Length: 117
Image 1 (tube, rainbow, N blue to C red):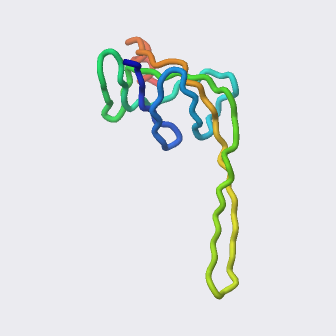
Image 2: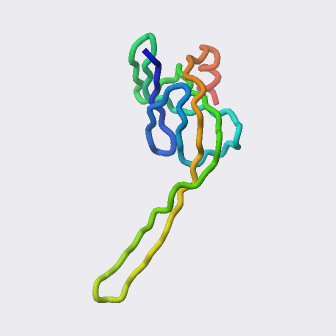
């Protein structure tokens, strides 16, 4: 059984496993930087399926930023009939492409320092 985790970033939830490439909303990290994607909401590994209430603090999902891109353009068009009112607005979301490197447990002393921050 291959392990996977459910993470939350940018207001969305993603089911990831090591080796996956995901597109998430813009992260502040530069290309090539290691990132820890948190919070981890659930994980399935050799111990079975576990989920947090609301998150798991003993699991860390790490990844590498591979690219920064812009998503396709989304068009918002408004019109009021018979009034001559028309508005057309476009939007392109900035995205970060991230490769998932691993899902690993966090050492007990690292957990204690994370809570103090």
